[in-house]
Image (cartoon, rainbow, N blue to C red):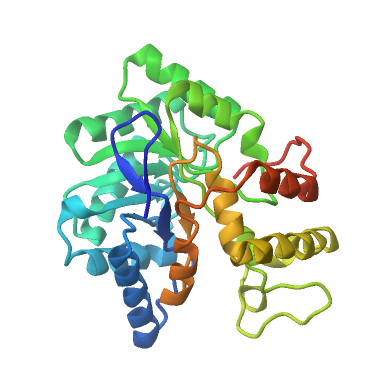
Length: 324
């Protein structure tokens, strides 16, 4: 496993991280498989584990608290997030000082930890002034409850405004962002990567395989694989991606991966890691074998010719999309 700095900062992250957004914790057998996946990740050099307070209603944090508790705290980096509703009250969501202070203590308890390495604003809160949110996050760094903070799925304008407020109020710096980034969604290349590079901000993208689109399991003209995410995901994100255009791209990308002797998923992850501004890629894995397959992307350098072939297939043009 290779490691990269978090932007310009001293923290080192494994190029491949393990996320818990879709981790199955529905029963004892599922949890045991998830625990084995974490163990496999740890044994193979993964040191970055990502979750959020809202994932499975707090169960994802409690799971990582249990799974990582057997390891020394200096051996891993853990992140979590705040924003989405955690109750029915008027203040049980968002990025107010009240909600963040209450949620950080709950997250620390769930994780069985004294501090959180990376703490993200899961989405932008239009009902709370940015200066209120940035101030409380800076305070949490000062208190030692978090080490670095950042945002996930904020627009370039929102990120720039946050950086301006931080500079004006002399606050602890915003150090990391967690946007969506994959072969089907490259919006961060237009402005956000440049903003991050200028300010030394690390980028740790989620959904690098586009909900499974770039695993190769979904093929044009074939039925959905039994038990795949497209057969059960409630919000149908993967189903919305299974367009004729995207599946045509998958069919053209598979021969490139095969020519390199790697799965399509590894090609897709290595393609993201081609950018030096990427600090780590957050992957999902429901079983150890999937994680081991992803592991192969670390340190894999694609040739200029391969990258050019991929770019011709993807045929990307800058566009505007809703963020969050």
